[in-house]
Structures are given as C-alpha cells and as structure tokens.
Image 1 (tube, rainbow, N blue to C red):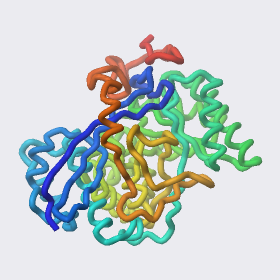
Image 2: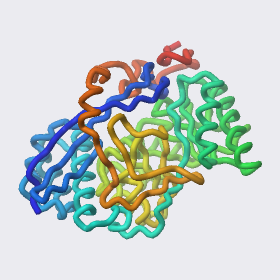
Image 3: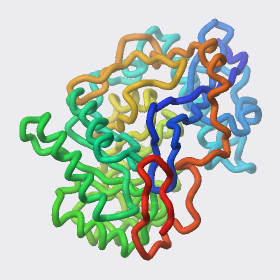
Length: 391
C-alpha cells in the first residue's frame, strides 16, 4: 500500500451560540475546522482534523510511502520541517496527517483504532467543557444541564476575568451536576487560558478554594512558564493542568522536570503519535494525561491504550458540519464504536455546500490574544453576547 494523494477541506463547527474564553469570543458560534484526507492506491482514505499550513512541504515527506509505517513517517515529517520549524500550526499539520495515517492503518487491519492500539475498554471517561464565557446565567445552566443529562459529573468552565464571577459560576455548575448525580460531589475545573500572572493565580485560586473544592486550574500562566506553574502549584490545593498548546516532548519535558504540572494535557490537533509519546513521558513521572479538543476522536482511541489516562474533554455534543463519527456519549463517557479506523466520515458535498458560512480566518475569536492579557490590574467587564472588554 502506498500514499498517493491528498485532499484538503475546511468546514465549520456551528455551536448555535457564542463560544470562547478569556481571550475572545466567536459571537456567532461559527468556528473553522480544517480537514485533511490522505489517499492510497488501495482505495483506503484516512481523515485528520487540523491545519493545512505548509501542507505541501509536509506531505512530500510521506508521499509514496506505506501509510502503515505511521510512527516512522511522523518522525520523517518532523525532519522534513526541521529548518523551517515544526512547532505551532505546522505541528498541527503534521498531527492532522499523522491522525489520517493511523486511520488508514486501522482500516487496513479491519479494526477500530482503539482495538488496534491495544485498548480493552471502549468507554472513555469525559468531562463537560462548554466554552461558556459569553453565556448569561440561564444559558450557562441550560447548557450544563444537557451534559448532566448524559451522565457527566465533571465540568470545566472558562474564566479568569473576574474571580467573583468565576466563583459564582462554579457554584451554578456544581449545583446542576450534584442534582443530576443525586448528591454525588462533582469535579470542578477552571480554565483561564494563560490570562493571569503567577501571583494573581495564587491569590485568585486561593480565594475560589474558600468556597469550592477545585479539581484543577488550567493554564493559569503562560504555557512555557515552567517556574511560574510550579509557583502556582505550591501555592494552591488544586492540581495544575497544562500542556494543550505545547508542541513537542521538549516543551513538556521542562514543565514535568520542574514539578510544574499535575495533569498533563495535549490537544487532539497535534496528532496521535504525539499523544502516545507524551502519555509515556507522563507515565514515567507518575502523572495522568488528559486529551483536549472539540472533536478529539483520535486521542479518544489512543486514550484506551495508555495506563495513565484520567479524563477527556467533551465540548459540543455535535460534530462539525459534514462530519460524522462512530462514537456516542452515555453514562458520563464517550463510547467508541466498531467501525474500522477512527470511525470518522466526511460528506464532502455537504462541506462544499456550506462554504459560504466560513468565517474569515482573521475574524475575532479566542485564537487572538488581547493586548492586556496577563497585565490587568482590575477585573474585566464582559458582555454575555460579545467578546471580553478590557477594563
């Protein structure tokens, strides 16, 4: 079997409501989702979700190769981009192609990827994550009730702009999940997306912990700040979770070596091989791993095969437009299906028909960091239907 071609598409994830975090909001709920399809001479195609940046250069490293040699091809793609740099969006391109190759490998074997990777249990524990910073309180409660109805008893809310508001919202989601769980104490997490300084993080989390038992604080300071994460971790009771924006083992290594992370995260967009390697590094330090992503299907399959998986992020209950997946949610967990490969299918006609809905790549959203992020003296005023406004 040989890799013969490549197709790229871009669809949208239509949330039907505003979504975002402390950095910004997609007010109309429309978010671009790039897709990669890798073709083979055996008629098997693999699908990966992720960037197309420098994809011609990256693809040249694997064209004509046997896609089943996926881990070797992952390293080959990184070597091909050695001088140009294989971090950031290019790392995502490598991850998307890597995911597509794993999809092909499992399809060729006639097995779902979770089985091929050695997984035993198709159920992957999940926590709710609604990207909820722009919702008013009634919308907020309604959204988390949907998760609670699917059996979820853990939730991560977005915050970081006003600690009193964050404390209040944590109480709202706690009450929703506790009622659904008939008194079972839920797990609560807060994600501030790198918007605090070290001392702010310690002060604010300590204030929240007077009221709530916080399971983890996510990305309290800048992603690369190993010393800062360690300072925060020593000053609070909650665990520190970080890593979703780190690209490469070398970036994770410094945080782990500094004792700066308690829950090691990695994003679905970076690919399956990267996740497996990060999970092994974390396991060597007795640390759990937790996948992040809007549609983290590849990492869900991989999570079944690692001994230190803790819980996976569940954002929207619906896939992107034109995409279907052999997975469902029940009893607080993702349940993976038996379709060979990832179980991910793309309706390219539906994607093409929705092209007019694509937002401009440079339009606002949580991917653009505000001018004063991490340098605010006071709380930030927010409008429930708009982006955060710097005070």
